Image (tube, rainbow, N blue to C red):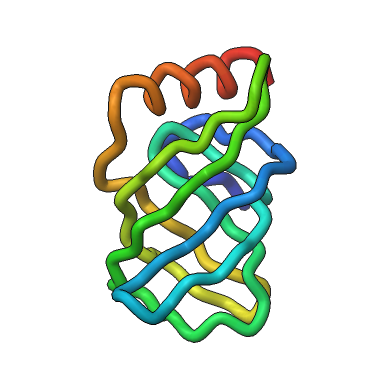
Length: 104
């Protein structure tokens, strides 16, 4: 039996995200799916691996464009991108993610 072991409900969305690591690493990717606990980022040709702590800037467009800052760890990396687990985000980002997940 094949089942999804992730704890959080995920939504497929189209959004841009910037991944930053250290002072020299910055890449722009596309969100494939997102939850309250993490995000999969389509990021071809990346060179970051599991365990890497990153700072992500997620751009969401509800009523206006808003950039949300998130601290995250790379949990999985493959040829198409990286799966990030969120470590910290502020209350406005939490509210935006809850709205996004609830409204699909």
